Image (cartoon, one colour):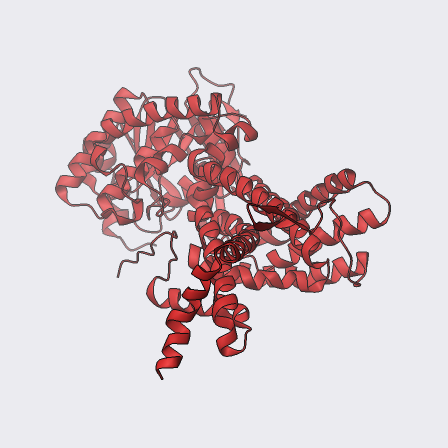
Length: 263
Length: 312
């Protein structure tokens, strides 16, 4: 509907999206835009609908109303793996790694969509299949270098400390060379030093891989530091949207965080 | 007392050394039987690896595949055509299972999926007998169940064929799972459904693939076992023999299924032949389970299984 409007089209447009679980409005007619190349932070108190928003964008939930456009095309009702194929990668609030597999294999699974080949050749590990495997391996090594996880390549992901697991999850998402990267609380449960590392990586990804990033974060100092734009949600509604300093000064945001008597 | 010790610890070994070509025959027979167990165990491993589901119906799938093949051949379909049709039936079955059983149960507890496969087990058993009848059928695959002699050692043609087939299948699958794109996707799905979806792995396609593969393995197992002992209901019970193989080898390991099968096949044959007379025979019937029990006590993840790590 709005896709014909004002060029250049933002990478992602969410247009009046609602999600209801029974009587609960997890998202209530939320509209927002994520422009190409930016780092957008989504903030809000617990239960504001931040993760629901991410789940709708990545196809895990389907909206009960509204539309989602990616690169100007309507993709409201796609399934998660189709969304991934479009170039949207994500991480999860509670780290969803393949725990029994090595770090390297975890990251290689992120390349699955970039790989092709015949089932039979694959089964025989023959010719092109082997060559392809090696090429992808080289790209994955770049990511491993970039995120400084060389030392744990062969470690089963389940054995790593939490902070490193989050980093491996980021690596797996990056391996898909996404256009849009969705990070659900990438710094939750980390100490200051780990948070600083993660900030550096997020900004580095945005810069070097030219990836647009939308992230959910609670730590306001982190949000102020790394985001180009901040979107605030409360009770499933968008209450603010703008530059970090604007949003921080917004009365509705302050009320949502500190709590006021709702009339 | 001394005599008893002698009979247990010395006598059998003296017998082995005394008749080496007989020992070799026993060993070959044991290993061949072991590979046949591995064939059945492989079906379990495939599905367990890719979906974390212990497929109770695997034994019946073997029976069903064999019944379909024999049923078609009895109706005058040439063997190769019947084989192709049976393969088509097993792949179709995989589609149906994915659509009717697995898809509605995504993200459910494993025990629920397990219960669903028990249901599948009884359904397939009944359905197979309804369509093809319950009488014992003879499966003739053109390989005679007879022996030839190499350097004084008798080798059974059927067992040899089964062993070679099993070995080839296993080699292909081991490489496939460990080194390739699809194999890695299968392991990913087994580990975490949500994460697998998020990196673009279509769960449904993967499930169809893996159940089809398990179906095809079931055909091979069905042919080999069917040719040996006739196609009848008891064929589905060989699944019970596959359980100790899995416990030994680890539920998630293709090479483990082979090693486990070989150890059990060899172990029970040796025990039966050399120690059987001491206790009046029938060691073969329980040897595998006792060995499995010992493994459960000392190495619950099996020889090659992934180590179970749990944070507390």
